[in-house]
Every structure is written in C-alpha cells, then in structure tokens.
Length: 291
Image (tube, rainbow, N blue to C red):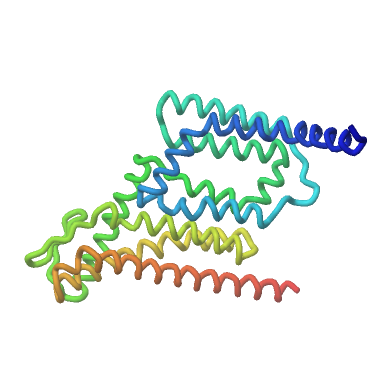
C-alpha cells in the first residue's frame, strides 16, 4: 500500500468523523418531527387556507441561503441545547394531546435551536426574514382561524350591503346573509377574506424585508395589509351582489366568482406595492434630509 493511499484513507476517515454529528442530528430531527412534517405538507397541498406554505417554505430556504452566514458567526451551545430541550418537551406534550399546531411549533423551535447551537442568536436575527416566512407557513389552529374568520365575514357582509344600498339596490342584511330580491348571497368562511389576508401579510413581510430598510416602515406595510384586505373583500361582496342583481344570478358562483377573487387579490397586491413604494420614497427623503 502506497503512502498516497494511506493519506487518502486518513482523509476519508477524518471527513466522516467531521460529518457524523451532522448526519446524526439530521436523522434525530427526522425521527422526532417526521409526523409534523408530513401532516404540514398534506395541509399545504390540500387545505386552501394553508396553501401559501407551498410558496413560503421554499422561499424561506432560498432567502436564508442567499443571505448566507454572517461574518464572525459563533455558536452558543448552551442556549441552543436549552431551545432544543424545550422543543423536544413541547413535541412530546403536543404528541400526547394530538395538537397539530404545537407539534409544528416545536419543529420550528428545534430548527431555530440548531441554528443557535451552531451559529448563535445573531445568525438567527440575521435570518429574521426567512424565519418569519417559515413561521407564517404554519397554519393557525382551527379555533383561532374561526375566531378571525367570523368577524371578517360579518365585516365583509356589512361593507358589501352598504355599497349595494349606495347603488340603490334593495338589500336586507342578516348576519352574513345578504338578501336581494329573489336571491340570497351567503358570505361563507371561504369568502371572508382570510386567505387573501394571510397572503397579503406574507407578501407585505416579504416586500418590506427586501425593499424597505427601517423596521417602522416594515411594520407599517404589514399593518396596511389588514385594512386593504378587508376593504377589497367588501368590494368583492358588493361586485358579486351587483352582478347577480343586474346581470345574471349565475355570476355569483363558479368560475366567474373565483376569477373575481383573483382579480381583487391582484388589485390588493398592487395597492400594497404602491404603499411600499411610498414608504420607500419616504425613507429616501428622510435619509437625504439627515444627510
């Protein structure tokens, strides 16, 4: 056996010893969190209210890779182990209770704990945007979604009915049911604007993180997504009632109704982009004044 072969063998052994802890960590993570990962992927694929996770999770990974590891990143093993232990305990407790949201939250906690263990808290702050997008990709519990969707339903119904009355259309509002002559419109949970609200908040966070510099501007942009989504959803209800009353009752359902929702969402995205541009110009103006 030549000396070159011996050197190569030692190098291979050294590489394996160096990579073995990472391989063991990855295997342990998969064993612990395989069930939450599978159920989360199933919900992303099958649940329309969680479908934005199919975009947010890969995007979060890409942004983390794009921003890279900050210079001088140094792991904090004790803090990382504390986070990992808390995540494992949460995973165990939520598994006994069969509570999906806390199981998925424990998975994120373990992932963040690994980052802190190897690279430190400053690296986690450096990755605040992908971490936030990843957190937003986890669907909220059904109880929370219901408590949010119901007020949105009633608000959209009130706005739609008010706009219909403004156009002199006979209308009677009963909860989330809008009664027109010979026709009733039921503003369902799917039409509450919850999906567009979740998507607009995610888009506002993404645009703010990539385009705006000041944290206050980013907070304002994300906050602006809420009234924009509520206003345009009320307009969508009004347009549906208007078309049903004046044109054809069939326009309140099916392909036309879905297409109308997409058009409203595109308009909402354009408005959010305009707000972001205004905030960006405000930041530049303030920066020039200070300079």
